[in-house]
Length: 546
Ligand code: FB9
Image (cartoon, rainbow, N blue to C red; front, side):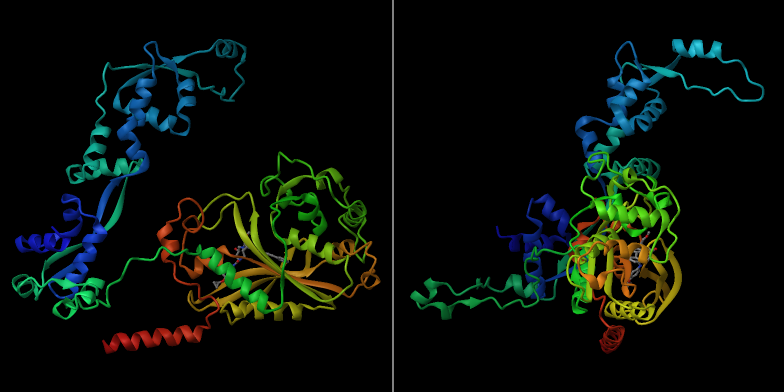
């Protein structure tokens, strides 16, 4: 029986829900929808979309069905003669404590304090200091089963949900299971199908066998004229094409790359996540006691711990500059440590790539150049809705003679202009490797407010001159006119704004909803506002017309 006739006979009795029917009759859902759509197209059926929230088991919920709930696994992990709590916690890892709590709550286990020898001795030794509360060392616990058999109600509830009868459970139970991430709510779309205006005529008229295509046989038997061919259904959606889709971040990155390339910038090589403190900090004249250089902000490498290859004579130059300055600077006046500069780390900014690139071009005759980099940088920050331990930094710099802050403001306006921003403000700021420095702000029409869009500055001579020292091209020799203007921003911030994503964890990482990536609209960063405005107006007028 064709799916079409199944549908026609089913709707005869009463309207039906497509999901229920496909499950009940084990019909492939897409095929059912396809047949339904074409009957709907001929008004044989009427189909209303229905969005229903359904409670389903999460992966760890499904695991309970096969392996039992964590608390039941803990119960059975306790041997007859008991077990040390610390032992058990080791076995259960991060879920140990909450599961222990669950077991106690179910009354399946009991615990006894066990004073260890040293705790005994400890207690004797500790003279009671006045007023100071004796630090109570938490004694380990001995855990024992309290009951012969357990009745795992949670598992029962999970089975009920698995059999799609969650309406049997009360809200409190469901909330607990949701908090324990054993269940979650998903939205399912389906159609409520009922007879359409053409139903009677379609089902009663002689069952015209509609041909869907002109077959060779018909031509050979020359009987194609006697057949009725099905009309093309130009509205049918067709099978969704599984094309590749760029992660929104990569869409914004390519928009930015396009802007740089249009402005004649060359892309720097950024394939070096592990960098030495020397290129990431020292070469940028960032002092070794600078807060950004401690483990709170920076991921230092355990292996390979130290960088081997650092150009000797450049290192001497950098050392001197940090210690006593030069090029009109007094330096940072501290004892510079080579060992500190050899510490490897995950680069904290792509400015480390800029310092290497500047050193590279010092080995070629001078000519004005423009470079950009867009790649990952790593910072040991507390994770929250706007910060991850890594983000994509965008950086551009221009090297030339006698570049000014005006040149910097100009190139920044041109770059962000290509990203659709029009109005800018610059606020004096501070970076260890640029002076003067400016934070960049732009007025975002969509958000209708000023937002910080980046940072910038003119690289300090204490950074530049050592990088161009020892070069054989005299038109770099201590050339005070040598100047490099630079600016930086991130890719994540603009992407979150462009795609209205509040929490960065929904943009990057394992919790990203791949549908969001697949369905993400194209990135129209550079699309001049007025065009967008016009498009919007057009849509409104069209809406009004309909
Ligand atoms: O990206 C940022 N903001 C931004 C950029 C574009 C944008 O586009 C809109 C959609 C159209 C919207 C927002 N920021 C830089 C500004 C802030 O978000 C800031 O809070 C966060 N910053 C990051 C660092 O956080 C610790 C963004 C990141 C950043 C900051 C500075 C630099 C690079 C990245 C730099 C630099 C620099 C300075 C001088 C010389 C060379 C490089």
